Length: 393
Ligand SMILES: *Cc1c(COP(=O)(O)O)cnc(C)c1O
Figure 1 (tube, rainbow, N blue to C red):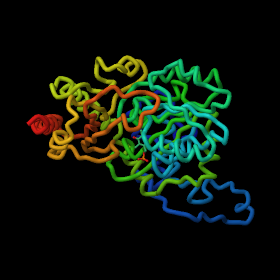
Figure 2 (cartoon, rainbow, N blue to C red; figure 1 turned 180 degrees about the vertical axis):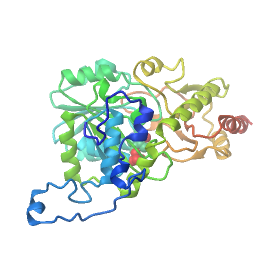
Figure 3 (tube, rainbow, N blue to C red; figure 1 turned 90 degrees about the horizontal axis):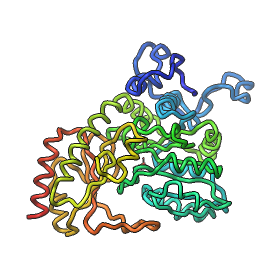
């Protein structure tokens, strides 16, 4: 593992790792946090050094000490060999896929994937001559039946964006290994703390660091973490595509990381309370949250995950647009907007029927995605209670 901390015995707990990884006060005059290195040009002392490129830093786009600090921290915490930062989570997705495919290839993409990932496959990959086949998120080991001679990779995201289906990652990883395919995972929901992709056979893990790592809704940032085998492909793609995170954003990622463990603890506790409360409401048809006992993915979540975060969805019994708008427009603590993972609570209506292709969405009612922030959960429940009064009034 390429991190600066020599004392790692592999025994330190995650909460300790997020505090200590990616910083070295003795190298920065004792100051606790690393500085923000802003820079393009890096100077070389001699012609020989210029051509030898032995310096750890050669150009701002390639890396800076700030970037390296966060990359080393994420690699260590998520359990991969090397992390590469990108300007957004979406850029992490596109860079990671482009690292492995070429014209004529076929890829298997989960039907519950983050929608822009689907757009990238349908527009850009298609243009490049790469065929995308969407598969049922619940397929498990049967994914072997979809593998063709030109299949290059399997892409998983668990739980799925918006609809929260749990995938059997170890079963899919087994197929990927047998068929010699790359296994890529969007691991944003669990963060590097609550799912350990490399333990379960994933080759490349993608984080929209914009969400929980930054954690305060104030920066865009992505991370690609690879095992030893996949790392050189990611590095080559990063070089040729010019992928590069911003300096301030990288710093905000490092700063957010320090509190990731405590924030997630609260997100998880509150989300479970709100999800339980919602599941008992007469206005709610079902709640989709794998941490909730009775959820179809609960057993897989218990078996493979170390925790749950603050994001889940529900289906209302009604699909009356006016009633739903009255409920949502009047919420005082839940903001409406895309993205999630910050300290604030959010809600967004969505319609899986509008984008699914491999599977049929069964529900008729309006679907809502909630992000449970760090607010006091009693205030959130009161806000929702008033919302249900508007919904049914
Ligand atoms: C938000 C998100 C992304 C994209 O991240 P950005 O930083 O917004 O580009 C990718 N995957 C998932 C699951 C996301 O929720």
